[in-house]
Every structure is written in structure tokens, then in C-alpha cells.
Length: 198
Image (cartoon, rainbow, N blue to C red; front, side):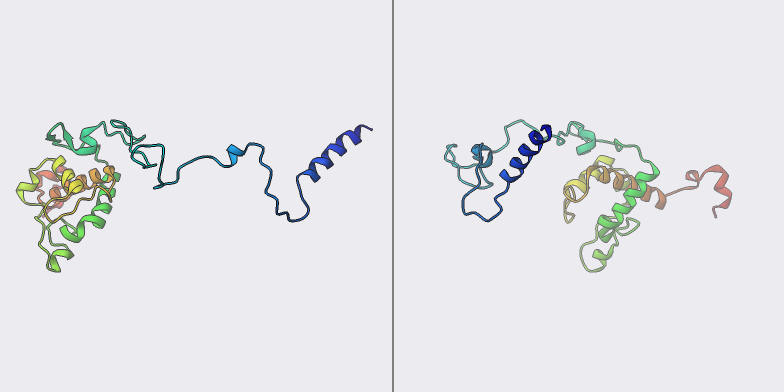
């Protein structure tokens, strides 16, 4: 008898959920407002707002989550109006290797693999960029190199959309390594290795 009380409701529930044949009647929705929610589609017209636009601009002064750029030195290469003298990141070997990889992809077509400004673009007739090994560019702040990568300069386009901030600092570190490699003196060689340098 107890089994009948369990089996009968289960069978009724099972058969109540199926129709066994196609029907032209719409399904029954007990909570209709959950099924057909009033909402705006992108770029649609709105009769609620005075300007007739359904897409609203962000509230003035708000910042999207993850987009706060509070560290001016890291995100913009500046402290107030001044360019940072040195990169605000630690230059590890992994960072320099990443900088080399990004430099080879984005920078070497114009600047060449060692930063002399004799990349393939210059060889094809475009105006060659200056060599990174000129004293003028060896003396600029790290923030200047970062700013040029970010916003471009003269013929160079801005790369802020293609290269993430951290990779831009890696490129800055690699440019500094290139400058040092092409302008090294005997003082830059560790004392125990100076005998091997000719």
C-alpha cells in the first residue's frame, strides 16, 4: 500500500510533464514576467529617457572594475608632470627575455634587431628611426621610452592598444640592455672574465 502512494504520484508527475504528441498550443508559463523580461537591446530606441537612447554613458567619475590607473609611474611612466627616471618594475632575466621577444615582434621591423634604426622598413625606403645608441637616447629617462612606445612619436604609431603595460616596461628594460651591450667598456665586464676579452 505504501508503494502505491509513492508510485502513483511519480507516474502522474512523469506523464504530466510530457504531451506525447506535437501541439500548436503555447507552453504554460506560471511566471510570465520571468519568461519575457522587459529589456533593451543594444542600440535600440528608448521612450523612457529624454534623449531616446537605451544605451547609457557611464556615470561621470566612475571607473570600471580593473581599470583604476592609480599608479601613475607604472601606467603612464610619469610622476605628476615628470617622466620617471627608472622603470618602476624589477628587471629580472625573465622580464628581459620577454622584452626581447616583444621587441623582436613590434620594434625590430623599424629599429632593427640591435636598435640601430636599420630595420627592414628602413631598408624598404621609409625614413629610418634614430639609433638607440645615440648619446641623446642613452640619456633619456625610462619614462620617455615608455611614453614613446605608448603614444608614438613622429612616424612611430602608438602601441598602447597592442602591447600591455607590463610588456612595455619589459621592452624598456631590453632597450636599455641593447644600449649597454653596444656601448660596453672593460669596466662592464666582471673582473674574473676580463682576461678573456680581447
